Length: 190
Image (cartoon, rainbow, N blue to C red; front, side):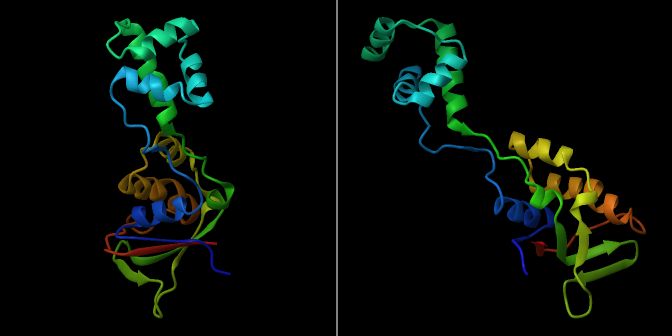
């Protein structure tokens, strides 16, 4: 049975595409774009989660003080409080990434596209050459997951880490390393 498939103009893009079909990446909520402390505080105090974020950064003010702040956007709030409001706002605005699931870590990857090792270069996943099959369970996913959770897993980083930490762990270094220099890749996860 066919599993999730990712496509892209590089191996890393296709890997990121298939990963995003399985889990939610770290992202910023589009509804949180306020720049001024007053607008941020107004938005935070509109939800229970916002109040929790204010508490988590240590902003604990009396209700009457909060009412004064909210009633006057020009109220002179101390710089340290403005910093805490901004920090709480940023914490609420960013949704953390979900961890990479076992389905991906332990999955069987079928890679179609141009693959080169040494002098052997083939278009994999065609009638002439089967896809490159990689057992993800043999790999070390720790650096990939660290980048993913931080929201920093760019396509080129994913490709480099996948080659070094997953492909090499499964089938070895290849004749002269692994190159994926084609312009289209499909990755199917089984």
